[in-house]
Length: 100
Image (cartoon, rainbow, N blue to C red):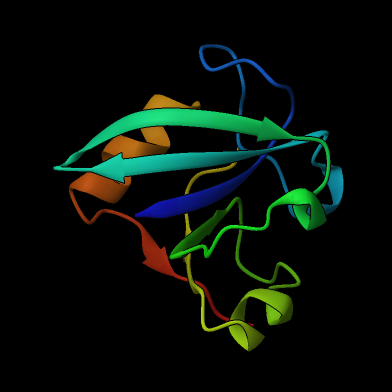
């Protein structure tokens, strides 16, 4: 399963979830068997050509229409959370469905 995250930097340890318009990088997480297997970083969302299963954004009210048009399920995590926190929230179903 592939999950995309808007991040403030390209670092798997220190990167934090930020609003989409503030993203300096996009993380593409490979999530399998209940854990994060890998993460790749991109400068722009448009560079990702893989089929994305989920997008996790930093707050309600983000411009999520492009995801919805591609049938990508959008969830909301806490702004400023690191990648590990976001993925634990995903794993334990603690994230909320995004609204527009």
